[in-house]
Image 1: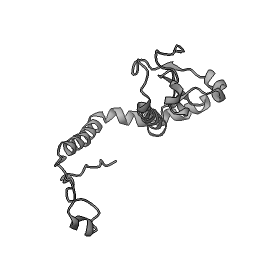
Image 2 (image 1 turned 180 degrees about the vertical axis):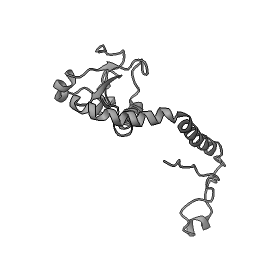
Image 3 (image 1 turned 135 degrees about the horizontal axis):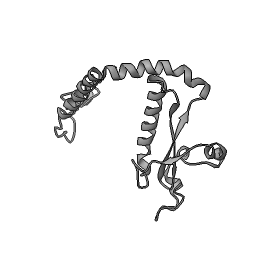
Image 4 (image 1 turned 120 degrees about the vertical axis):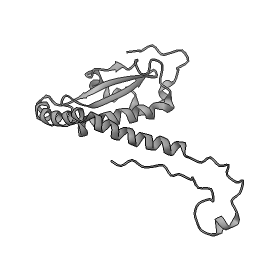
Length: 171
């Protein structure tokens, strides 16, 4: 592990959420776990306010692996931060549960790969709709003060509403 503190990183622990750090209370468990520095994606110390990105990525990966595809040997990824660097560890499945996951994984992953063209086209349609909605947003300068009748009418919104509302993709 990169136990060397980067220059200027004194007090780094105060910048990151407690649950992202190696903790003496979890020492026995963490010492039995394989941790690797994710220096491919984050070769430099991770910015504290960007930790939410790692939270979303690991939670999404874990949910997709365990609830969608049922990847047999894994239940997602856990992570820790040490001296600003991000460390990952795969969360394994109990060995006795792996065999039961294999047929479900094969069916799900098989469908995914057999229908890649259609799934990709559907995804691309949803993404392009979002891009078009973003490109259609109206950035008209707002008035300094809304007219009195906007306030007294009880409309609950200003007179300058976006011309296009973002499209919510269907699941």
